Length: 321
Image (tube, rainbow, N blue to C red):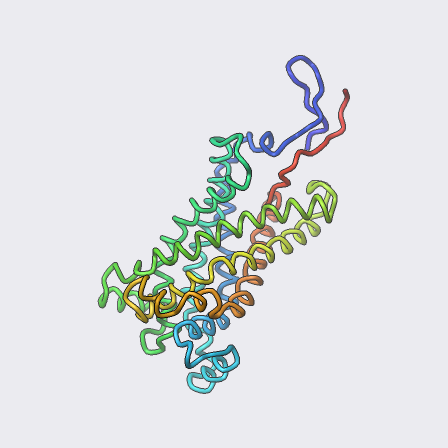
């Protein structure tokens, strides 16, 4: 952070804004680190929560049989054994790893791009537009992995994993089978990503201004990562509430509980779209997103980069009048 700026007439200025700090272009290596960080953080955290995801998917696809978390857990354990809770782990690790790389790497790229184009626009608009643009590509990459994962988790005899799942699905449904749920996937992840990134950015800003009451540059790396964790949990929890209806639709479509989006909505019911599997989804998404942001920012810090999130208000800097 500079102590003071001097204009062309020799006068000192004392305000440095976010828009000014965003003018210097990032090297492409920066986006590469963000992409790799997103891949590793998303892949590992989704792998770790595979058992919870198995419970969630089965409760969505078989709501009558599994009407609670405890009944789903005990029934799967009794009938299929402990290995049932790790079904779909490869789809989680590789699929969400690819999605995470696109989501985080492209978000940083689009945020810089749109900041240059829409100079005078509200920052929330930039956050929404950047995250939505990144998520479009991220979900195209994720969709084939998600198609296999959901079937493996809810249909034990479909396939063992990606290696036999990909050729089996292609043989039975062709390329359409891999992208059968793309529209609902966009419906789930676009609102989630937009709310998640915007909530994270605003939470970081709030925490530094109102709680820490110090500039990010003046905080230790541990303090900065602590802010990342708090903002990440807020972002994940709020995002899960927004995207739960589309998550139920995705699981139903992939397991052929209905043939179209309209039929799925009619069969599940409007209220159940918002409430079915919501408690376990909050348990699943909140900690997962927290860990993703923590791992992601740790990788950035170890690479010599600042932690994520911008303090969007102007910062007063001491300087000569």
